[in-house]
Length: 103
Ligand code: FES
View 1 (cartoon, helix red, strand yellow):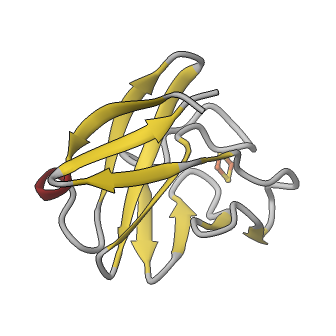
View 2 (cartoon, rainbow, N blue to C red):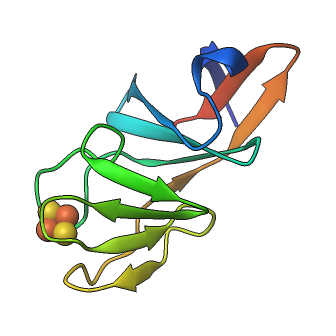
């Protein structure tokens, strides 16, 4: 595993998301009550950014384009129309740094 620093913990307030660029596309970092999760940023249903065009409620992000929902803890689809889950990325915190493994 190769972790890279992507941002600072304080860059992502509780209930918010941040878009960061990974080696294979953008990644969304979600803050669920102080726990951080990294998923692919692009909705699996269309070309839409979940960090910038999604609404996070608890651990569910709703895509604002067609109202599909995903669990950001698991990547699983929680509401159609998306069929495919979000890809998840390993994430860890060291000090104030947020690190993600993009592989
Ligand atoms: Fe996200 Fe359609 S693009 S639900």
